[in-house]
Image (cartoon, protein in one colour):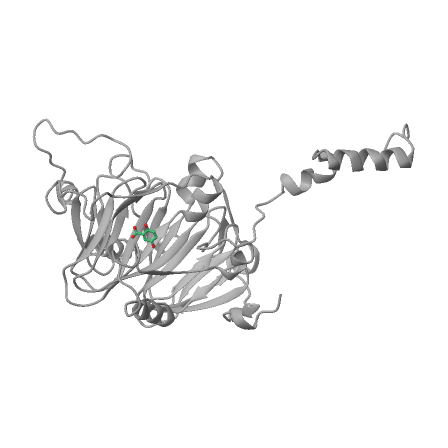
Amino acid sequence: MGKNVLSEAEIKKYYEDMKKDSIGPLWYDLGHMVTKEPVHDVEPYLWKWEALRNYALQAGDILEPGKDAERRVVYLQNPSLMERGLVGYGTHTLYVGIQLLLPGEMAPSHHHSQTAVRFIIEGDGAYTAVNGERSYMSRGDMILTPAWTWHEHKHEGTEPMFWMDGLDVGLVRTLAASYFEPYEGDFYPEEPPENYSTKKLSGGAFAPIGEKQEPGYPSPIFNYTWERASYELDKLSESPDNENPFDAYAIEYINPTTGGPADARIGTMMQKLVPDQHTKAHRHVHSAIYHVLEGEGYTVIDGQKFEWSKGDFFILPPWSWHEHVNEGAEDAYLFSINDKPVMEKLDLEFGETYSDNDGQQKIEKVFEPVDETVKTK
Ligand code: GTQ
């Protein structure tokens, strides 16, 4: 490089001295910092429901929430991120756990700076209370417990109840903004009547005279029911005009007071794919974690085929080509959480459509899980 004013030895010393003083030369490193495209070490991955359910159910014989542990949850650990010691990372921003609550059990009230969404997989009769407002949960419902809100769970039903927890664990850790506090008693005092907020806003919006609904976060709705979500999707899929080329028939859960995402930081989406539907591929900055509510098919992620069926979970890393296919005889429903609201707020979200091969990828590899015990270092 350069200007030939200093000798080679002087230049060598310059770099060595600078390194000792913890200073770097941008002319070598700019391309590593300001990369042409998103750079990440998040690999796609897939977990079968049977294994997740079994591990969660066995934990039912090992510990009890509220006594031995804050929560009884087994979580998805992305092996590609475990190597850096990033415990609880599904993607670099998002966490997913499977929570089991047995009849009669409760998980005590606490709050934290991470925001959380739940998606109910199996069972009913348990409620989540958000700041003292109870909402009973059934399969397919999506429940918000927004950042900082007090929340607890209690099971008044008769069968084991499984749900998915989605939190922005990686994001909050990167921002060094984690905060957690247990409530001083087990239960936050019950305040509004059961499901008050959701009822106030369904089939119209009503409030006692003088009671205002402030626009903004958190959303006044905590329980986005499957009954409503499936109604909306069925209505959408009546006409192929409503098909999104990349997401099939898809709805986002929204905050009615802002029109934006239901949760301020975790995006939530439900997609319906009718039999044989095969979307086009695209990629975007935001990452996602998918849960298969119903159906059988596969998703191609950067040329790798991830075969899924009811209950499975899979990782969609940032900036990865992906397309979905319904191979079953029935409709498929894919629920997913994502970090799009954060990317959009920070003006970092963008995307690209796949143009080769009529917009669909060639399958180069079929996903096989890794066995951590046989992995060589
Ligand atoms: O139920 O509040 O999976 O605080 C992780 C952290 C669940 C919960 C998780 C939590 C919860």
